[in-house]
Length: 442
Image (cartoon, rainbow, N blue to C red; front, top):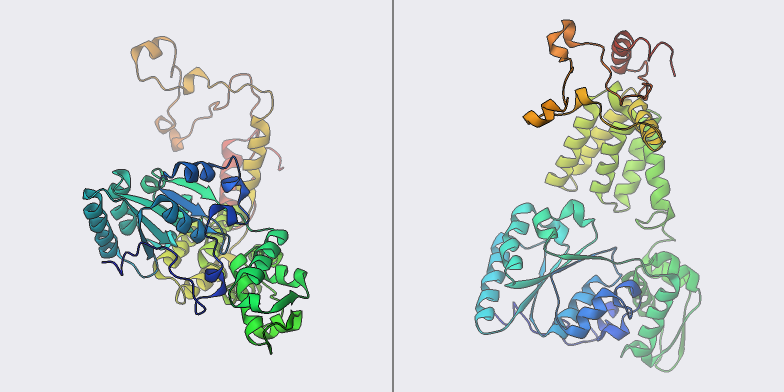
């Protein structure tokens, strides 16, 4: 049990461990970045001072301190520390930890469970944690790169404090590396200089672990002599990383440029270009769920009622990606991409929504007229609620021309269907039903 549940979260530092682990902060005052959480008035600072911690979800990109903060909490709290990776743990593992925590609790010892990549836990695995978190059997610290609103079940989310961590600034990346160069037992034996800080900051993109890994890899391939100066150049970094400067990263400008090109290709009905940008993102390691989410949005925003089935397919593709995962989910994405790109297009629903938003923000009548109000009680009926309402199904073709807008408001059209795909029939029908409103096109 001691091997499975070590009390020392960090373990002994040694030369075999990666540089990022060897120089991991040993106290909250050594953490660089995340001032909004650990600064003088930060919420985490208060918990560290009290040495009492709630269950917490750390949400943020890789290499910004989620694991470090979890380790520091474990050390400061004095709780028994258990680390699990959501990638290779199941419900049985969760229950084993909870049983261990119950045993420890009976002897007055508390247990802190750190789950890395908690967004990879399915609903059953997350459900298994609920009772233990609610009853205080365990204090849960979860780390996720994904929005917990989408990836963590509501019941568990409501029992945790959610703290968002941000990318480190270029200056903070430099501080992290400089600190490592003078404190690491191996690197401090040499006079190491970084020739091109801007390049190191660019390839790190706010990720301290990436920066430290790059420094360690470049250091390993240099010719070195203790006490001698070593200059880590741009060329040395590129050689160590076996690549030129990345043309795509999941945090930088190229990320947004590429997804923009992808969406524009779908909108432009070019399935080949859309596949091109899809594969570029997948090759670069983009999260397939991010791509699938954008496809769901696209289906309603850019296809809409021109092909109403598009959003159904897009949601199915998203679910398939969730269920299957890579690499096979690439096939699902390709099907969705080619279908969405080939569909007729209409943004009429989206444009109508924006127009309605603009209208409702104006100083106009907005009270619900009496005939449209619900009347569940006799008092409401006596007040005239629901009086005069004409039930469409009582009329021929299930339609009666009625005023559904506020009293004193001149009805206007927000939604102008296009002559595209199935929406052309919708346009024809609405023109017949609301002749005055659709007497002329937008």
